[in-house]
Image (cartoon, rainbow, N blue to C red):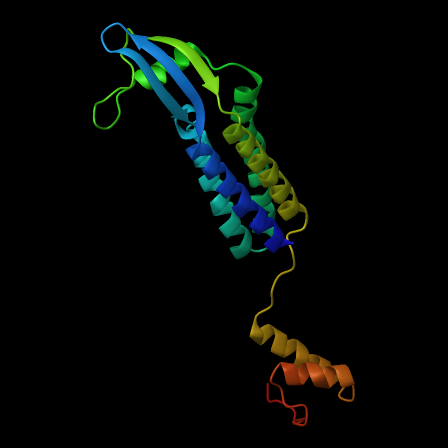
Length: 201
């Protein structure tokens, strides 16, 4: 189940990253000096935490494959909680209208090149929602929640290394040297079942 959970976490992370890069809003504004302004706002701009959650779920995917059972359970619980909290921005966007003041503040902030989309005196006339991005993100959070619960509840069995498997096969062969299953298991573990000499401790 850990592989299934890891696959779902990777898919959830990809969906959230995709949602963050998509356009969530089209904004129409008016500036007394430059006139009408049309611009778009991506999910990453409106909710910066979406990208962080996508990266966290991607990291959880890797950790879910690499860690042992207890570690996988902890990662699963953390991924489930993170996915549940991560759904809140998408629910807020889909259930209510965007705040014009917040939108104006975002668009009037200067970027790394010192350029702002809107001036401080520009007036926002209309904000149109593109729902596909938030819906995609919400589905991604639901997948992340399912994957986290799955990983926490069914973290899978520990994989024994080759040396441990070999020891187990040798013990089975010593206990029942005429067992057909023990003979085949010993051969699979590269043990010669005809070598019955006692080993020196």
